[in-house]
Image 1 (cartoon, one colour):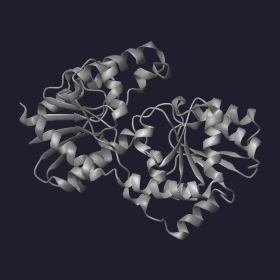
Image 2 (cartoon, helix red, strand yellow):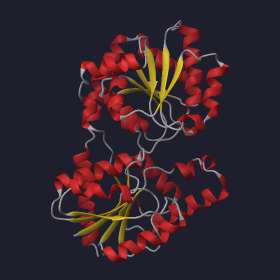
Image 3 (cartoon, one colour):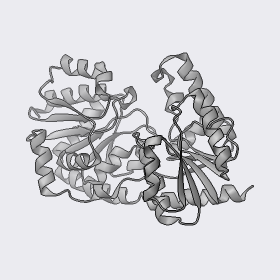
Length: 372
């Protein structure tokens, strides 16, 4: 069997986590299948660490570009795979072999206003339509995302298979005391703090989180409580800064920017509560990482988050600032609840497994090839 996989997003957030773990686990469990990785030129060296059954083809076309619609199929013609797997919703129309597409979420259809301009919205709708109708199989990462796919596209439910994401093993491990002390000192984390991790795009609902944090401080006397927000591209979202200025929270809300997984693992463990008030998630890895770290989580009751968190977190209405504040306060005030959430959170996180998920993906590769 010869399988091609588009890994050009391996260094991205979200989809990049999926790609890295997919390739890593395939290299561990499958030494017989020939894998052809379509990658960026800088990533050609990655195949040397994966095994003799992995080769790579460099492609310089940009994501969501016209060029990739021609360049990727041309490279697939030369590589002659039996199957092509693209780990996001863009499947070139001219793909010359059977295909599988992973659709993580339908956010560009649910919230089209987050895309800039009519051209971007039209491209997203067209790319989704092509992926859903031309792919032989569709993978997604939650039942919530499957429901969204079926809501937007009238296709057979059996064409869509849910295979959950998982997290890196090191989130379960206690970081070295030296690393904990180093991070605490670097960021001067000497007070109790509430934490958010992820990107800072509008659907993450961080303006309401800042409003809820202000309400919490006003009503409960948590004057020393801090809010830490990590994530890239913070400077692109001026409304977050304005929210901090509006409430005069300059000394209490801190934007730490992008953090490595190793630093995040420490921050999760230092935090008193992890809060994730997102309006929409295909899966939602940060709450799972926090749960694995033994940190109680407060998450929104929207999209996939109740499905992922189960009974191991406090669910709140993400559109209601008071609900978010009350959820945080419940965890801060109730030590028995915190202990219960910690125990349930670790157990819940362990129920998701990259080896098991990638084994299922590999089985679907085989099923799709055999169906020819």
